[in-house]
Image (cartoon, rainbow, N blue to C red; front, top):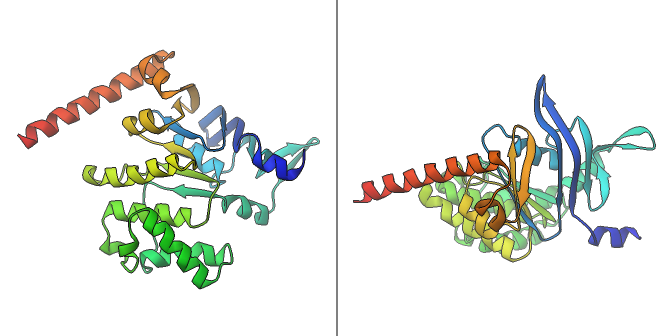
Length: 276
C-alpha cells in the first residue's frame, strides 16, 4: 500500500495499550481506542477517570509511558521499532500536531490580540500563510462559528461562549484532520452552552473527525457515533449511544449514568422552581 493510500484509508487515530502515570499515580492503564475518519467519539466518565489526559496524549501535550499511538496508520511521537525505542524529532511532532485541533476548558486566547488576530496567528507562523490568505480564511471560520461581526473585538469584550467559539475558529483555521474537545462547555454559564454545542453539532454534521470529552449527556446521545465510558484510568465500556445509554453492560457505567441523570433531573427541578 502506498503512503498516499495509507493516509486516506483506515482509522485516523489508533491508541494501543496506552499507560500514563504522574509520579506513583497511574492515570491511564492499558487504554486502547480507535477513531475512524468522520467519526464522532464522545468520552464520558467521572472526574479523575483520565479522560483529559487521554486527549493530551493524542496530541503529545503529555508523553505516554507505554503503548503506541498511530496517526493515519503510522506510529508517532514515541514507539518501538525493530527492538529500538524511536522518539520522533520535534519537526515531525509539530507537523502532526498542526493537523490536530484542540479546544480546552479554558479558552486560552491571547488577550492582547483581537478575535481575528487570535485566529490568524498559527496559520501565518506555523503554516506559512501570507497575512492576506490567513485573514481571508480566518474570516471564513469566524463566520462558521457565527462571530464574523466580532472579528475586531478583544477577548475581554466577548462573553465566555463567544471566546470559546473563537477558540474553535482558531483550531479550524489550521484545517485540522482531527478535533479534540476537552470539556469545552464546562466553564460556561448555562445560557452560553447552547451556542458552542451548536457549532460542535455543525462540525459533526459536516464530517469532522472529533473526540469529545464531555459531561453533556444529551450531546453525546444525539451526536456521537460511539460513546466511551472511562473510569479509574481505563475504558470500561464503549458502544453506540442508543445501546450505552439505554442498556449499559457494565454495572460501573450504569451507576455513573444513574448518578448523572439524577443530578440533571434535580437541576432541572430547581430551575423550574426558580422560574416560577
